[in-house]
Image 1 (cartoon, rainbow, N blue to C red):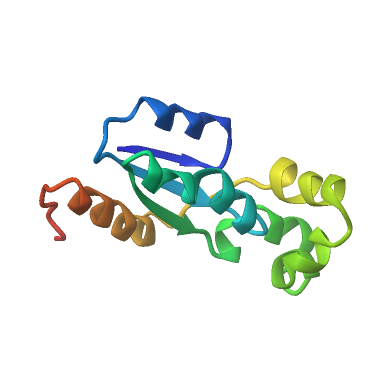
Image 2 (image 1 turned 45 degrees about the vertical axis):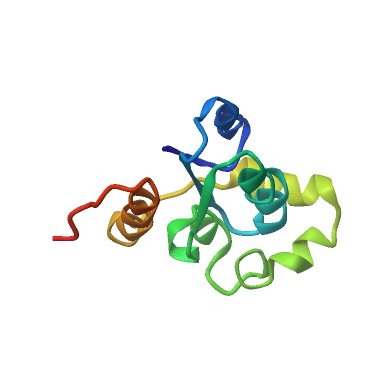
Length: 121
């Protein structure tokens, strides 16, 4: 199993054996790029793919912009401003503070895809 945030580190998936799991942490505003670069190719590589989409409260952007800013509530409006703006906001400024209780469910699901059972308690 390989777990990581969207980015170059996930290219290590090329070394995973067939049947392995790739778990991608997807930040706000990067659904398209995450799916295009990792979600779509994974099945063709024989990998089980799962994404964990963070919620606004798990993104550093909420403290920078506030919960009602278009960066948080309407990422598409930021994307329409062009790649440089989109990249600066969602790929450069954004950090994650993962809700480990919620994330655990994703990891248990990924573990199950490997043909093993994981305790839920």
